[in-house]
Image (tube, rainbow, N blue to C red; front, side):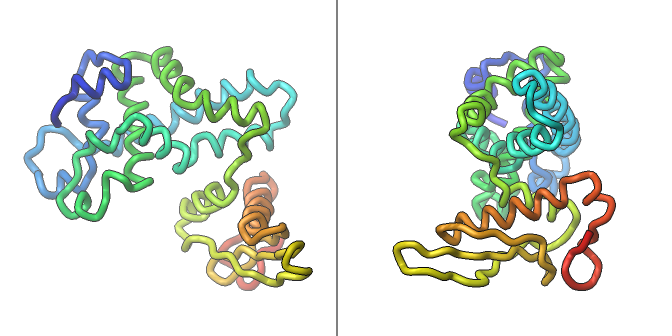
Length: 246
């Protein structure tokens, strides 16, 4: 790892144990090519950071939105901590500059990959927690997520249901969802599109809108709502035959 000082300046945090900061950027592909490297990969820190991020975000949303029910709080939290949001924050901090990757991973654009950036962000949170404690981790997380939270509060940012759905599906070890245009009716200046979202041939949800993009988001919202709900998590199956049913 080079230039840890510049990384700490960007973060606004001085680490007591710089090896924790360094470990946050060690991708497993680097260790495959450098087995004698002194530090492990960032995966354990990522695991810890993910849990801390969920807790701190939930606590903040509980305070910020006293009027919202559990279901809406869950959706907002999921949107704030989803891979796309974390990767966007990581890009703003230029975390990719400090990633240690194997040659093949780096050659394939690994420093810009959403998954690598999001994982590094979670690992960094874990490292901050271990080195600085929970108050500093909370301060860091809120500083990074505050712009997104403010946009949500002012109605300028809606949850990205397509991203949320994809993450949920992938966490269940299924193929990414696909979107199928069912119909487009009406004159060109006022068309109405209907889209279905499917996973491995099974219909998860349907949505309509003035564009295919809007219809896809509505379909994803419908599917996400079913899968997120407690009763849906117990009663829906992605592995059964035919269309998903409650």
